[in-house]
Amino acid sequence: MKRINLALQGGGAHGAFTWGVLDRLLDEEDIEVAAITGTSAGALNGAAYKSGMVHSGREGARARLDGLWKRMGAIGDMRFANWFRGLEPAAIAQAMEYSVPFSIGDAWSRMVSPYAYGPFYSNPLKPVVDRFNFDEVCADEGPRLFVCATCVRSGKIRVFTGDEISTDAILASACLPTLFKAVEIFDPKTNRTEAYWDGGYTGNPALYPLFNDDLPDDVVIVNINPLERDEVPITPQQIQNRINEISFNSSLFRELRAISFVQRLLKEGKLTAGEMSRVLVHMIADNELMNSLSVATKTVPNPVILHKLKQAGRNAADGFLANHKKDLGQTSTIDLPAMFS
Image (cartoon, rainbow, N blue to C red; front, side):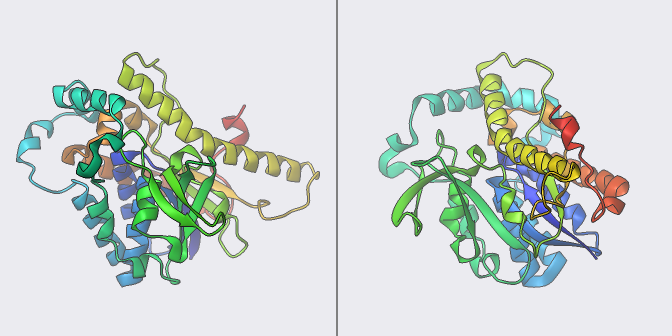
């Protein structure tokens, strides 16, 4: 049995890619997920996966993930999306980004605070998250789950785990401040109620919870934010989207750089082996696809795009397993020094 940890990035509706990755990993009877750290969509995927595993094993996890993305818009009345079916994701993304409704909504979100809605405000994710069985999500059995959010007051990351995970914790992890009100949760460390925003600002996702001695060495990162974009963004939406991508990747890069630094010191004999002495890092991604999408496909869960993302995730995981399953437990498949050179 190969045991791995999963690090699931946030990225709005693009989290359907992770749905596909997890769906494919569930086919591998000899791979066990020991722990999951997730932010935003990654936290939702992680909660669905764990809940299903606790309830009825692999098929339960698959069913809970399908149910999550059905609620997010993956399966529904497809009649109004039929004209999208024959288009490539890039064409759909462009059509959505330049549509009048999206342009109006995007401009509105930049000018109007979510606090301006008063009693009419509601978080559209709340009914989705409320459907989770938190007895299963917080259970001692199954993969350990970590949910990342950002404290507004201090700017520090907070990682929820065990009984701390709740509807509010997951909503906090996915709280983009231009769209949603900050989520308030009591923090026993500060002995006060703190306001939280999306965890991507400080950990997308945080890797350090996975460095416990009782967890496996392998960390498989499911990346849904493009690491590089060759084209310079020119529209306001493209510029803001790239700013967010860089911001949300920077926290992950910092941790990967620290791992790379520690491993170099160990190799040179300048550091004694410790918790980070054998972190084996892997990544499942489809940068070409993600580069072809846009902020519109990230914020609007179009059913056709979501199913294309799921299939892309399955394909990416299939390629990873074909090329690197044998490397699990043996060696990293990301060249960290090259990444930061």
